[in-house]
Amino acid sequence: MDIERSEPAQPAHSTRLGRFNHKINKTRFGKYFKLENRGSNFTTELRAGTATFLTMAYILAVNASILTDSGATCTVSDCLNPSESCKFPPVDQGYAQCLDRVRKDLIVATAASSIIGCFIMGTFANLPLALAPGMGTNAYFAYTVVGFHGSGSLSYGTALAAVFLEGIFFLIISLLGFRSKIAKLVPRPVRISSSAGIGLYLAFIGLQNSEGVGLIGYSSATLVTLGACPTANRVSLAPIETFANGSIALMPGGTASGAIMCIGGKMQSPTFWLGFVGFVIIAYCLIKNVKGAMIYGIVFVTVISWFRHTRVTEFPNTPLGNENFDYFKKVVDVHKIQSTAGALSFKGIGKGYFWEALVTFLYVDILDTTGTLYSMARFAGFVDNNGDFEGQYFAFMSDASAIIFGSLLGTSPVTAFIESSTGIREGGRTGLTALTVSGYFFLAFFFTPLLASIPAWAVGPPLVLVGVLMMKSVLEIDWHDMKEAIPAFITLIGMPLTYSIAYGLIGGIATYIILHLGDWILDSWIWFRKGKGVGEEEIENGDGAGSSNSGSGPKKEAEVA
Image (cartoon, rainbow, N blue to C red; front, side, top):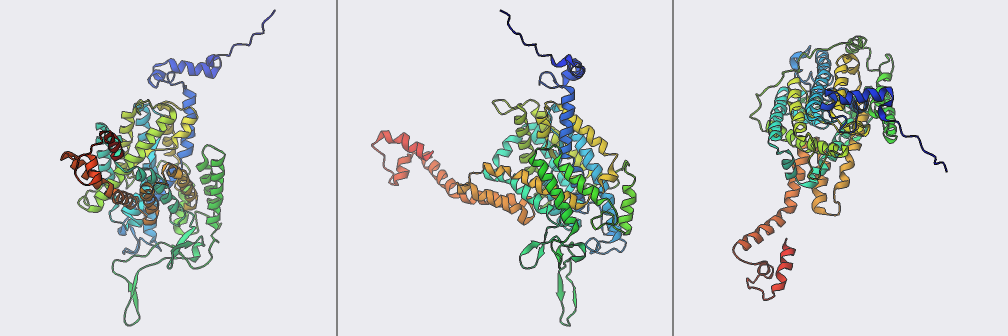
């Protein structure tokens, strides 16, 4: 009787591509990156790196736009008509031109810091994790620490100095192996909810005018209200004082705000509706698990905005619009950083705001970056039973080193990106994935004119949807336990409503301490009485007498524990 035999499966290296990958795996190059040991190959790593870059390339435009809102190195002296109000709407043309130059600098700084971070991670840690300036910390840097057009508590240079020192401390902590231990000192509900709080903070930014679609506007009665009105219907606000003769003047030290208040035409802004279409495109791609979802939405809105003589153009018929359009037409141009590199200033190191910013940056980086590294390593299957993973020592030092280099170039803290999961899902298992991402960021150097021409209403939708993705962490909070739920909620809601990550963290930690203070005092009292030789039963009975029931001791001890 004949037995039907199935054809044996062809080995992976029987095809031309398979043979190529097999040869690469056997070379010194392949052995260094452990391609064969981790079940990967050269082309898989390239594909994984491409997927990772597509999902995080939005950071080039978004980070530069957010940091530009701080004013960066631009000052009153850049104005054509220097005054304290020339930085605020209506913005002086000279100051606007300075902002345009700074935005180009920051695109290059973002790409350069990402290249450095990804290169170190890929070469030394050999992990498929990509790094870039982090969302959340960049908004805190721009809108809380430095403030809109420099209206905050620290100058741009001083804020960079805080990031630089934070990177030094971060590197020392990483070298000594204290990162995971310090992260565990933060109360669990605050630690978990901070990610979601930062997500709400980013979404709130993406819904405003300065760096978003403009859906939210100012209301004198309710503080915020529905906006999305055309530019012609937006007005700025300023603090004024009225004199006895009826005249009014700007209050001393007061400045005008951005165009944040609508005086009519709500929901009639053409740029808002174009941004909304971009939001739908990104949302639909996320639903269908399409790689590069953020990029598709940004590209669609941006390309539509590049056409001149339309109501949604990024290049209006103004001197600045004409200048930006002339630069845009170059398409390919290698921009040299002119002002942001080496802009650190340690003059404000004695201010309390300086150390508040430094501690906040340090905390967020310890919490966010360490958590991302562990979660991505676990997703890739690298974590062992002890909670450690191969290459973690160099991985911890990679992002710390990238923070230092990034501050020297002029950007906010660099962190590991959760979008690295896209490349891991594509099969990335080695540092070649990170090196591929580094290569793509290098190519971005040559397309600065295009990246500098991405409008705010193209950046807003991804900010909102990044906020959606960051809300997942609330599932880990025990909402039935009020001692955990209340601090988590204070942290969660405090960040967007105070427009500060630091204040949200302080509120959450303070609430946690207050709610647990009574338990801690009782536990301390019990421990103190035990040290005096008084048993748990005497404390429970309050009479100091010993108990004749010897069998109840373990039970009471368990209850106290």
